[in-house]
Length: 326
Image (cartoon, rainbow, N blue to C red; front, side, top):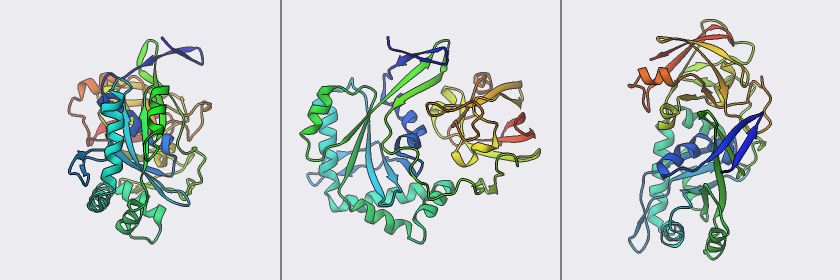
């Protein structure tokens, strides 16, 4: 069993048995994989190849670099049959994307998903400026396809097989380690598509908006301020955590700094975790989830599912907050 040692704590390699366990992790860490200037959108729309065969990608990632790029994302497990599943799936993507009808389907579906989430819509508009969203997407979809395979174990057979495809995919290995004695604490090992230092068009020094209100910067959070977020993926409930967007990160204390949550089951001591390698304790921007001692709270609130909104009220800045369901 592979073991990762982090600050004296042992993490053991964990292999997902089903893709359904793997997908939420990729979505959660999409900005670490594709860069801060990206958006990841799971897609349910079937693509139909000219031969009439259907294929469903796991998602699309849009990277807002100087020359924006879109990636078809396939999340895979190495336990799947290499030729009958993985390679055939990629070949279908390539054939399907050549179908002119698919360009409109893709652009329509992506636009619908972006507009269905006010934060995603605002993010995209900030990135593309005065351009119309649908026109931007249509131009992007018309470009030659780029395909990314994200897999938990990359081997030589997969690399060799993909070299013979007409469109060579980018392959990224994404390994997950579970902390010994704390199975809800994870560490991930992967190589990003884009480095996190990719220049951003959004100035993080400026206050951004979450649920209709402007959030203060670090040092400006005061008693009475509040933040509402919605649960996004099943893994939040399964592993007892809350995902925090980068623009709202500074509402909470620095990385791995304990703070108290007042709840209807009593006080909970928790912290912001899950940061990039080398993050320093106390870093106000490091970490993307609030996790620790939340399992019992989720156990009581079985009604908390995808779409459920929770609210954090600041009582004592960076020390004490109140947690409630909206």
